Amino acid sequence: MSVDLAAALPAGEIRRAREEDLERILEIEQLAFGQQWDYYQFKASLDDIFLVYVDQEIVGFIVACCCSVSQRGLILRLAVHPEQRGKGIGTALLQAALKELQKKELTDVELDVEVVKRGARKLYEKVGFRVVQVYGLSEDEDDSFFIMRRPLCLEENIV
Ligand SMILES: CC(C)(COP(=O)(O)OP(=O)(O)OC[C@H]1O[C@@H](n2cnc3c(N)ncnc32)[C@H](O)[C@@H]1OP(=O)(O)O)[C@@H](O)C(=O)NCCC(=O)NCCS
Image 1 (cartoon, rainbow, N blue to C red):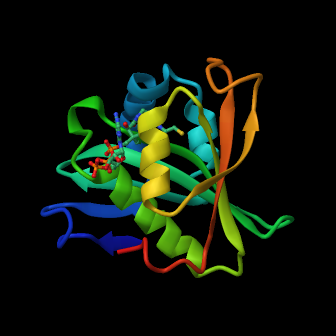
Image 2 (tube, rainbow, N blue to C red; image 1 turned 90 degrees about the vertical axis):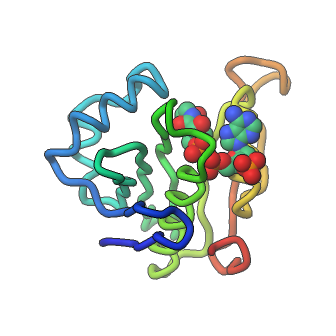
């Protein structure tokens, strides 16, 4: 899949990941999360909806898949290289994943985000996700997280 986002992000392109991208993806994973996923987890996800933003080099990725049991899309991973943040790349990746999930027979999309990741939560809210559940003792707990959900029929937040 190739999604042309030239209007929003000049010289930007989003496409599915290939095996040769994994080294760079792991580099960004390390910078973003301290390597929670390993090579084999990413390799196993290549067949899922797995999008990479490319501008000469890969600067971010998203892992989005479908859960056929719950008929729900799942955003499993989203990361942008630290030097490329704040330029709309995270938003573009999310929008591309949502567009792709809309082609399937799914009702909504779900993700979890740590309570301490306020920037990520704002990004998800910007594209229409809302908190539906909180796990953890309080919102101040480092290990607390939100479950956020978004109906797939919402058109207005997908450019
Ligand atoms: C979260 C992440 C993917 C955002 O990527 P990005 O390309 O910088 O995001 P965007 O530029 O598209 O930002 C979109 C909106 O998100 C919000 N946002 C993103 N980062 C923010 C931050 N650090 N603080 C406050 N708001 C932030 C803003 O509302 C922003 O919109 P605005 O620029 O109009 O204010 C990136 O910071 C990242 O990789 N973080 C580490 C990994 C991570 O936390 N992933 C999410 C796990 S659930």
